[in-house]
Image 1 (cartoon, rainbow, N blue to C red):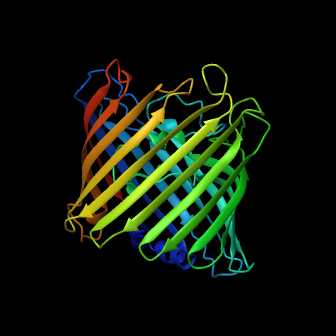
Image 2: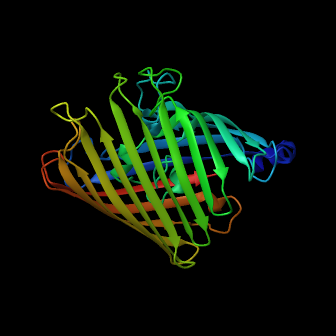
Image 3: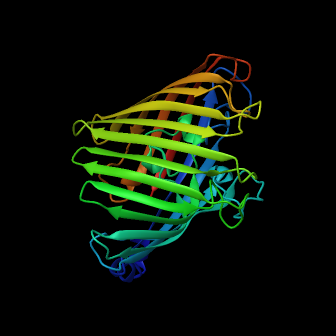
Length: 351
């Protein structure tokens, strides 16, 4: 927006309530336990000893307000980089093969209907409400992701409505084409998506779920339930928890139902404007899925968020996040070992 302002373009956009923003992220990860090129169990940080352009993320957005009758908005978000390989929805850029790819991560319109306290209706492709961690790295404390981040969907395409019961509670419900399905769909069925959200004082949280078939078999249903809560204990300390449970009717080795579930706890402590300390502990049970680990996994991550220029108009967008992480499993699932120890660091610049 600062660049647009220099060209005299920001004012009309701001008057229309439109924002243009984004970020650039790069990273590097080293596995001390194994020199293999890939790191098992990781979401976006799976490449060992490889300088990675994770994301160039660009957004054009007009947010909507429950208090405004017939308010209209929407969002368009593009992602370019290595992370885009895993974000594709069926029918959108999903035939690409290079390491750095492009993805239309979100594209939806939204309208506020003057019903009661206000009803928001969203139509298009949007990021899932499930999960404590996000595809957008600037919304997370860590560069690496939890194991349970990988068992919930990234995006949905459909219609999704949110109603504000009061200042604290919201309820949402909608129908979608399924997990990572957009222009094309791998079956002829729809999914149901729902969520209950809570915000009051220092506490935020949500209970969300999705139900529907996710394979080519219309009768093979997958059920996912996600709960997360954040608590700002003080100005310096924030705590969080995330629990997920996923059950699929025919996902086991024997064709029977299979379940996977886990829980992760988070803590962030701000020492000053320049430095935050982040911690995460996780327990992940994945013993039944045909394509799973067939083991119980544990994870401990300790990291920093460094803000070199916290008060600078432009430099405040730069964050550097080094971390050390230890993964342990009951079985030898990490390239023939039952543990792995990694160091990773990313840097992103939000603008």
